[in-house]
Length: 254
Ligand SMILES: CC(C)(COP(=O)(O)OP(=O)(O)OC[C@H]1O[C@@H](n2cnc3c(N)ncnc32)[C@H](O)[C@@H]1OP(=O)(O)O)[C@@H](O)C(=O)NCCC(=O)NCCS
Image (cartoon, rainbow, N blue to C red; front, top):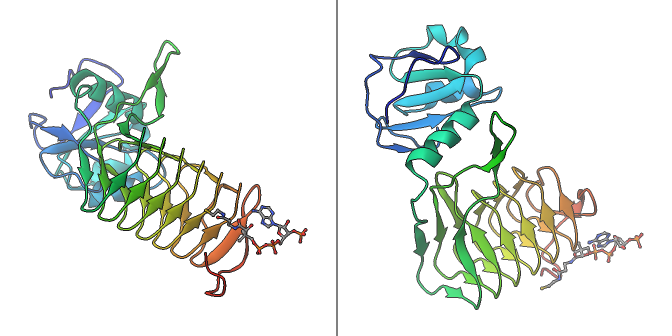
């Protein structure tokens, strides 16, 4: 990967700007030979914590980043997500998804593992273009996925279905979702991208989660609920939007 630095919107700060990077990775797991990107309010501490060799950063961070140690190359651009997506599309678009299946897994008819995530960037000319995915799917031991369900690959890392979890029919599990151990995800659930589900969670039929929510361990989400925010451990939540109603007990536990 090399970067053309003739764009007035782009500036680079780093050890000598001539490093080589092998592959993309998310900021948290990247190693010094990998590159990543960031945006959002917490970008600065995440850059500091990251071991990535190069990070594509928002331009408005340039001044603040002047005091950061020069242990990595920082590339400042107006829209880091768009630039990162372009690099992935140009250099990594044909990476097949790596599907890892644990022992004693049962994958039923018409299940599709490793489809591209449903994420987009908007190009300068207004075209909506897929954010490319290079990650995979990891299904742990003892997992069962019933007929017709679909599991997207991760964008950079893996979408994960944890040990002993049972997924019903026609369930959609979006890219980067992390599903814990011994969960039930019942028929027609729509788990949108980057949903985190803790261990021993029950998701009843037809539940929809907005992306980036965290349903903590032991929670139960009632039939048809729409989860738009985090749910605390052990709570029963339902409704649109889902509200925490009461704590789950062992009595009559599903
Ligand atoms: C969430 C759940 C556990 C709630 O059960 P519950 O606490 O016994 O609730 P109740 O039946 O006593 O109902 C209490 C109230 O909440 C309402 N309610 C119950 N579940 C609801 C839901 N999912 N969405 C909206 N309202 C719901 C009831 O209509 C009732 O309202 P009311 O007081 O105005 O009459 C249950 O609805 C559920 O979804 N169970 C999971 C079922 C499942 O997974 N089935 C598939 C098995 S594979």
